[in-house]
Length: 80
Picture 1 (cartoon, rainbow, N blue to C red):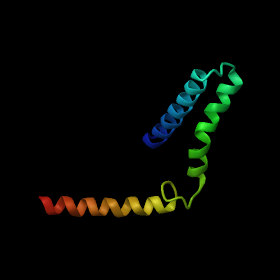
Picture 2 (cartoon, helix red, strand yellow; picture 1 turned 90 degrees about the horizontal axis):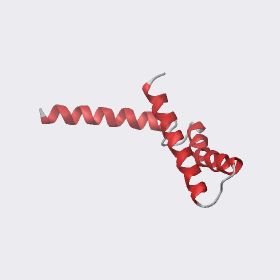
Picture 3 (cartoon, rainbow, N blue to C red; picture 1 turned 30 degrees about the vertical axis):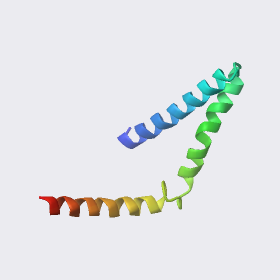
Picture 4 (tube, rainbow, N blue to C red; picture 1 turned 120 degrees about the vertical axis):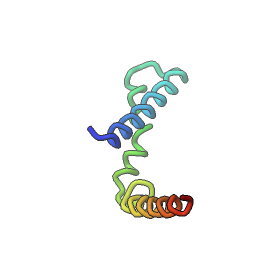
């Protein structure tokens, strides 16, 4: 499994666990309620990552990342 996939899974897992802990601290003790809270916590980011036009996750993000990498390399050359 590559590094990006591991980071993605870790991020979703943290959100899931925090949502479940929050629901538990608010009095939800049954497994169904805790599971629903966890699913709701990751639903937004999952839906957003599936949108290929989303500027943070989709095709636009790839283009922006490439441009930022080019700028960083150019800046690094100037400072040497």
